[in-house]
Length: 195
Length: 172
Image 1 (cartoon, each protein chain N blue to C red):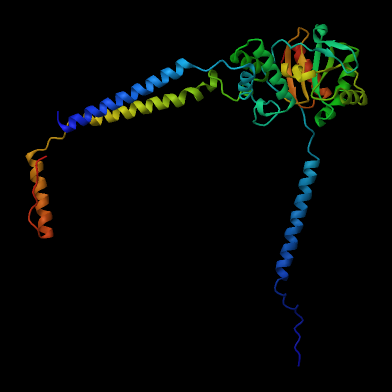
Image 2 (cartoon, rainbow over the protein chains, first blue to last red):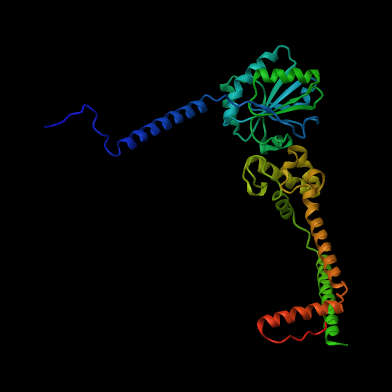
């Protein structure tokens, strides 16, 4: 005679371990996906103000040929606020900030209170020119042959931005991609003498 | 003179001779000096102590980054213009800050890095010398009759325990 109890048959050895392994794998997969999502959605880089020896000092001269074939001399811009931006076409944060700089330049064109000048950092003139044209940038960009302008400003890597007062004094130095709003904020503070 | 006294005298003479040899060697080394370095040697020496601004922990001399190349060019131009090492360092610090120098400056907050180790060495040497001198000049311990009796008693007890006779105690 066969006795049936109606209970489930006893688990085979190893089945419990396989079950646990599946759980662990599932949790690891979810955690990995969450990490990837977190990294992908992390905010973009932003500029930080850096305290360098040049702040409060006379801005080093910027002279040289521009990407558009003209020539530039910073001293000729004395009397208005100047934003000096070191950039390169190969640098992602420069690509990130470029539309913001375009907006800033556009907003300040009519008032004429502030002007933007770019300095090409370790980039071929043709590539930098293409980058400027493709983004609609119309401000002068100076070719820094030999990197001497970057050295004079103590630039470590692009993008770095300086605000120069109408008297030719460096009032602020930023490392990282600027925004239009950020530039306006700092410019307003600089005009008030808050920096 | 006793053999002990003669040994001491010889030791003093050998120390004086050693000090004289070191002094003469230092004097000769300092007076001979080294031939003035060439521009390339000076540039190389300065570049080796300047941090590449766009690199991680390597000198301008060891880097091919554009910032390092620009600094090398600037250093070369300034050496050729007759500037001193201190003037060139000051220029770089005025642009990048003190962290541009791999060698901490001798003034300001980092001065202790230069002064503490030699000062600690001098203090340690002085302390050691004083301690040795004090030990040498310490008066010999006077042994009283009571001490001798105590030692004799202890030796007698020890001999009794081990079954032998009392040991002879010599006066120090």
